[in-house]
Image (tube, rainbow, N blue to C red; front, side, top):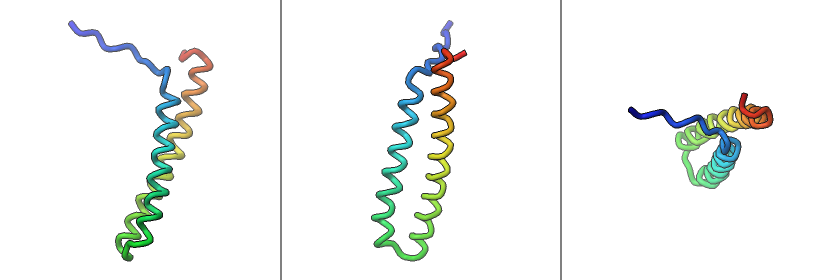
Length: 75
């Protein structure tokens, strides 16, 4: 019988920070792409960047939660 792996949250903050950084880089790269995009493509990129910014906000909130949980010993 297989046991589930224990919940290892020890590196969640670092993983989330990396995800935030990657998402920011994607936004920056999309700004370069938008210079060459037509109206419809530009609109699609802008909408995607809005969703990315919402994701960044959510990930930063989760980072705060994970950091607090780490300080409290994940109780």
